[in-house]
Length: 441
Image 1 (tube, helix red, strand yellow):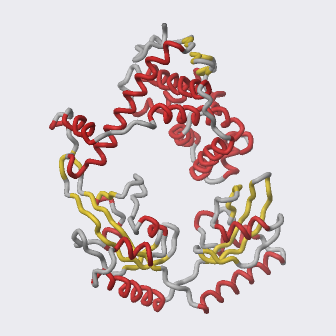
Image 2: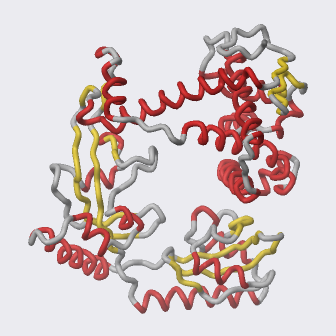
């Protein structure tokens, strides 16, 4: 990955003092007891500039937004709001994990910044704590806001009809999943294979090399099976309980999880973190096991035909994947909502429901789950919404959400207007800005 591309990726997700060595330093404003650095303004400005080239006031808007965040975090401390070290560390861990997924490995991240992960984490501490404090304060100001149906109606009615958006066709889906059972001969074949690899490693062969040859985990095989440094709670329980008990260099016995069968080696420990590598072999599912799973689904669906249980209740009772916890509803992984744009459905799902109407369900179909397992599922069409102009009947939840957001912005702006009167503000460089708020008294 070229350096410029990497900078763009990182800037899109984070503005932190780690980049300050590349940008002219200096304080441009003080809000309460919070200093705003020129580097912070420039980092955000560089991030947004490519998508807003015509906005001559962009740098000022960036500066004003950052000053508002400083204002929130300052008053969070004044109001004795707290952010725990665990909250800060968890937020940092998530961001570092994202960076590693983009760059390719922990080692590459350290090489790029010329710092160890612990040094990078240490530099993140102050900025992340400030960000979380600002979020806490914003939540305190807006948490009691509620939008009544009358508020939603009033908000909707003030939108000019010509400005109402068009929504494309949407569909809401549920699924009932059965994972075919692995037969005993296949299990034994894999256990024998992993035990053979364990003997080879104990005889001196390199674990990483064998992982790159034999592991069925595409994300780690190219890294020699290395999972990187992790804290407890990041892995499936059975894998983690075995891995965490290993000594440095020690090999586990064969471990079975929902992903398949693993051979694990402890690389080393660092405080509360541990670094392990593994070789994963996924079992092959026989055609007979798939046929049995389909027959099981057929028998379960008889309860719908007999009108004794709804599809959602059947999913809760019989489904074998995580969607069972939400009555089988399929979440849109791009948006986090339950609605899917019909034209954006991945092929295996769209082909499964092809021709189905609302309230109908598919035949049992083989698919590959998000975690790479082969399963059999029946998909139920909960609801279909045709392409339409936004209206209260079909889009109440969306309109309510936008109305609530507008109310929050209004309340935050009023809070800002009042709190500025009693907050120390010193703007040292205003970039000849046109302010939306009275920052300079």
